[in-house]
Amino acid sequence: MTPDAPDAVPEPVPPGLPGLLPELEWRGLLHGTTPGLPDRLASGRRISGYNGFDPSGSSLHVGHLIPVFGLLHLQRRGGRPIALVGGATGMIGDPSGRSSERNLLDRETLAANVAAIRGQLERFLDFSAGAASAVVVNNLDWLGPVGMLDFLRDVGKHFTVPYMLGKDSVQARMAGGLSYTEFSYMLLQAADFRHLHRTMGVELQAGGADQWGNITAGLELIRRSEGGAEGEDRAHGLAYELLLDASGAKFGKTAAGTSVWLDPSRTSPFAFYQYWLDRDDAEVPRLLRMFTLIDREAILGIEAEAANRPEARPGQRALARDITARVHGEDAARHAVEVSEAAFSRQPIRDAAVLATLHEAMDGFEFTDADRAAGAVGFAVATGTFSSNGEARRTIAQGGLSINDERVTSPDAPVPEPIAGEWLVVRVGKKRLRVGRRRG
Image (cartoon, rainbow, N blue to C red; front, side, top):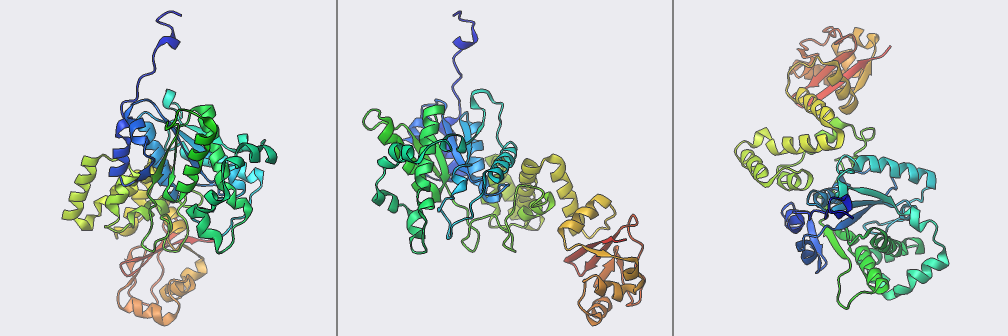
């Protein structure tokens, strides 16, 4: 082989791996690691690390963003991120962080979910970065063909029942009942780690702090079955912080208790943007670190601006704009900003695209020509803006109702012509906005 042949060119050493843990710690992502990981990263040699994602649904939600950003930081520093979508383990469920057993899904549903989640991961990870290219794998590919006897012989024999019962994720479910199916989950996850270690050279598994028991089970299986020198660290574990809301529940739900999804058909880009824009001031510094790639100096600058001009909400705006653009693209983020500013600026709204988004996202309603012909009070009651004529009259008397940004001064005032022949904008006081769409 000549010196100029491609195979003779040594792979460049990733320059940033020694800084990975300090970066994760500064951003509030790092919960802990196994003892040997800092030295392994300090060597500067490329490392492959994986995180598992449950495909029990067709979309990730914002609660998944911590491990997603963990893989993103690994790749940015020269590591190779592996996203394992659990087509096999998703068929039985993981007891970690759960109080009840989940419904089991069929293979066709799981396959569709796996494909959808890969598309969402492509918004974050680079799948064409050479030796550091991201990879998505599905554990159904290697666990599916394994027979029960082979699994018990090759995996189950390495674990004792007391070892498995000692895991926090198991203990938390014992009182309420835990099926053998879910009890076996940690063995399947351990088998995943060993398979990726053998076939792809994966040395690192990462996950939320509530996954630590499953992560260490994988380390134990690799240690017992792969041999190696005494005391040698063949594999490593990393745990991310769990981000909890004010009630102590996992982060990522709206005030109504619904999850905030990355799929725009389940959570619109505007609603996604608004979710981040509505974060409390005290939350924002942490969220900016966790869920953006904005550098330290810029974040400190945003925090200083927020201290001087809290009413401008610069942190919320930077956070919402950045994460919406990453998840939904620049055009969707720009539109979300325009809609949000239109909704809350008190300026007249005449853009039909903005009105269509607000109609879908913010207490939209439909109206007919007959509703309009009933006059201001009749219209307001018929469309659900007020529950009674008396309530509508009192609000009008106090100057608190406008339609298409025209103040309503009389209960019998005519309803203005719809914008573009289709839309009516109703404002009640300073905070309530409704957009109506003409029907028929």
